[in-house]
Amino acid sequence: MTAETIESGAVDPALLDRAAGVIVGQACGDALGAGYEFGPPLDETNAVELGGGLNTMGWDVGEWTDDTSMAIPLLDAAADGSRFDDAASLGAVIESWRVWARDARDVGIQIRAVLADVAHPDETSARAAAERLHRERGRSGGNGSLMRTGPVALAFLGGGAGGGLGSEPEVATLAALAAAARRVSELTHWEADAGDACALWSVAIRHAVLTGDLDVRVGLAVLPADRAARWGALLDEAEARHPRDFEQNGWVVHALQGAWSAISHGQGPVDALERAVRGGRDTDTVAAIAGQLLGAAHGASAFPDEWRARLHGWPDLRDADLVARAERAATASLARS
Ligand SMILES: [Mg+2]
Image (tube, rainbow, N blue to C red; front, side, top):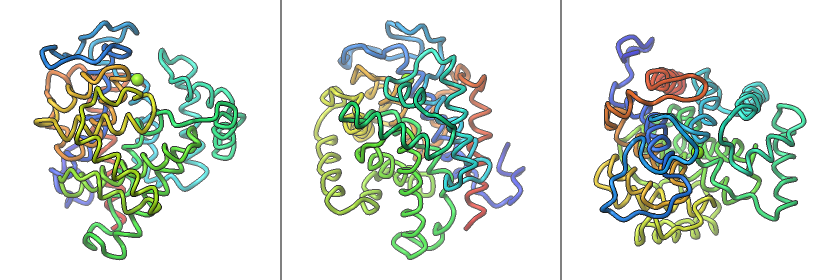
């Protein structure tokens, strides 16, 4: 689908490329990091390649993993015009995750436990399962909700876009996006850190798609004041250190810091994804998180054709399918403004 074939006929092709970049960038980072998962940090003399690494999970070259697979039902919902505030679309997302998890090769520990405990595919049941897991284990701040948050941002491109930064409609749209990102996060992750990270990243993704600017701090305004100060300091730390320094990157805070560190030190989107992977350990997820925001700013077209030609994953989709869905989501959401 090209800009010319879109109903409104008025959507900027560069903006559509950036919208597609959210999911294509995520899938590229995910597939690039897949073979390196659980590995140690690598220094800059190590090449990072699609299909490289020890590949202990046996992924195909270009195959995306749970990170992107879990984002697909959210992308489908956004393409259908959902803003993740109704029972039907949230229920459909949860049911899709349950179907996926039955046969998936790799499901995160926290996600698997929560989905197994969801009695019915509805929001109330999922939230209750997420809270139970938190109470049992004393924590639920894994990176598994941040890794899938990109499509939530695509549902909020319209409404306030023309009002200018800081205008009343813009502020209301950012608040609604932050609430939706937190709500989708809380389907599996009860802890506030996960919701904060999803709100922060989703607002930055929206801003990047609309403007082409990479500024993760635009999202600080949607967090409660005390937590905004904390996240501001965490972002400062990310910029001062390397992805490998954020060792606990299965934790949402270190995963976001590792991703932002890779982006802020990267010379363009490919170098930034490689830096994310060189950080080691949860390589596919940190690179998938970085890829969402990199793609939002630089566009799907900024990623190598050789990578995009190899991309594939659940549920039997390829690059063109991701692009078509993201364009539908962007067009549906922009039509609201
Ligand atoms: Mg993964």
